[in-house]
Image (cartoon, rainbow, N blue to C red; front, side, top):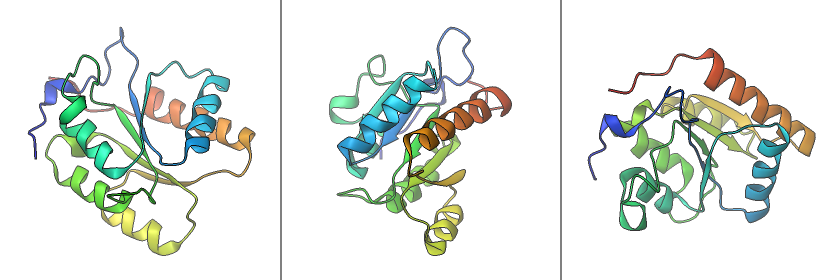
Length: 160
């Protein structure tokens, strides 16, 4: 595993919005999330990855994600559980085992309502578990609530 440097995480720099990394394999869901965030007037820069392997490559700065100027570490990860290659549960386990990456809040955003998924992801260190809303308006509400909570209310670790 590539060592992550704390200075790469830019939490509360007033000159830069917090980066959101979205791990979602479904193209339509990616488009809906982007549209919901635009509708909710979120100004955060979004990066998308399509599977768990690509998520870890991004976070660890591997392969095409080596340039941190182009691919900065996120301040928040939205994670689908049912990802190809490496599923969201395994990716979460790896993220939360890394001494630096574990500080990045991870929000599971999935279609699952299974109690087993909820319990297991919290056991693995997820910060929140949200079942995807069925309506676009519900998704806009969720993204606005996430933004308000994670970017306005919560104190995140300082960048050193």
